[in-house]
Image (cartoon, rainbow, N blue to C red):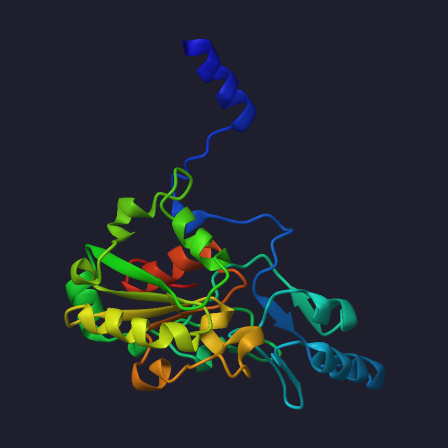
Length: 257
C-alpha cells in the first residue's frame, strides 16, 4: 500500500505550503502592476491608447494612474504600453482603504496602513475569525479561489481563519460579485444577521468597483455606500494568496514590507 503513495508523491510533489508568509508565485502570474512615467511623446501616446482600450476604465493617462479596484489584470495595457506598464508577480495587493488601490508611477508596493484598521478587529478576531461568503451576482471565479484557501495547499484554517455557512455563526461577511439588484436585499439581510462587532471584506474587482458591470441597470451597489469595508482585495479573480495576505495584515499577524 505504501508504493502507490510514493508514486503520487513523486508525480505531484508536496502540496502543503509550510509557510504562507514566504510564498513567491511563478513569474508568469500577473499581479501588482508597476508604472513608469512616459519618457517620450510616443510612450505618452501608448499610455493614452492603453487607457482608451481598458474595458473598465482602470487607467487614466493624465495624471497617470492605475486603479487596481477596476483592473481585470488582462495585461492588454502592458502590451500596448510596455515601457510604462508592466505586471509583476506580487500578490500582496489588498488594502484597508479604497484609495490604497490607486497606483501611481514609482509605486513599488501597495501600502497597508495599520492605522486604517479598526482596533476592535484585532482585539476580537486576532485569534479566530469565521466569515460568511456572499456571492452577489459573481461568476464563481472568486468564490472558487476563496474555497481554495482551505484546501491542502494553503490550509488557511491553521491560522483560525475560515468560512461558516450561517451568518449567525459568522464574525463578518466576504462579498464577491458586482452586487446585482436581485442580490442586494439578500446581502443586506445576511450582513444584518451578523452580530456586532463585525467585519466586511470586499473580494474581487467586480466587488471593488462593479468591474465590467459597473454601468449596468441590473447593479445596485448602495450597500457599499451604507457600510464601510474593512479590506479591499482586487483581482479577477482574487488569488488565494492575495486573500491570505490581506487577512493576515488586517488581523495584525504580518506586516507588509
